[in-house]
Length: 377
Image 1 (cartoon, rainbow, N blue to C red):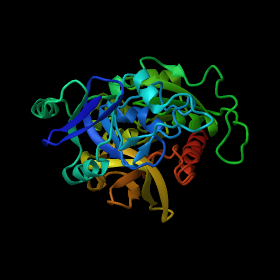
Image 2: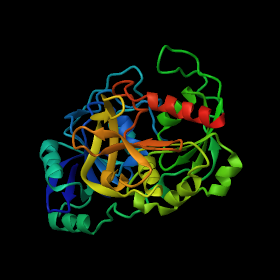
Image 3: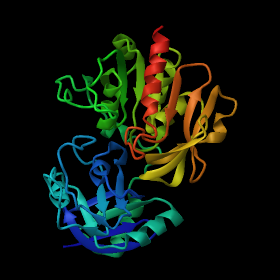
């Protein structure tokens, strides 16, 4: 069956359908990772987006039930150059086609993903529609133009947990290992409240691996409930969309400043920055992939990072605030991290839990633990 991807600038790509059938809308973006398509598909940060993989062959190792970042795919659609008909991995339990059908996600293959990526780099991420039921270019382009954008939109409410829960309270992770040396998990010494703006499971796993008991709370949780939980530290998770679209989150974080050590990642970094008085803005085409170079300004060392964001903190807006920039993106010099000059507060734009380096940024979780330990004393 044919499928069509139409962009708001009037570009239409024709390809073959895989996965589900129907019609979906989202901002079309590109991801430069060679592997990790399963983690990309169910990363809540991709809510509201149709993702294009720049690597040409996708699906060759299938999909398993262990590498989920959330319960189900969050992307609005999936675009590849070629879908592998053969899956070869001892852990594979679904083909990519079967997986997308199971969760009703539309895929398109056979289009020139290089041309699409170059267009997005030139003109920026765009509103789009992916369809198997409409083949009229004019109709599709009009649908793309009239679809909802990401600026000012609250996508967090669509992916955040509806209730408070203790992560892994049933002990399913009891057989897990730390990333270095294959040592058993340490005893949980620190009580951490994690705000779920669209949290990835591996972030929660990493917190547990450094000795944290993690209580996950909805994005709209008020300060009174956080005080009631009496955490040693607060974690602000990744998530989708525009940080200015969730003003209630920034307001709650503002009320927590000075009360607890705070660590933020990705959207959590942006929300924390807004709460501290900085500004954010939309990037032209964003940073998405497992090969993004970041410079640690303190150590003067480069780290290879995983990133997935379309918005960034305005580095110029940090001037005059009690904040210092700790990391920068070596591709475009955008801000990748902040630290408060006097309070136990820091955050990064990239994903230290994703291990592309593989352990270049894992020290950040240890720093959070050290910060909580000092605060307790």
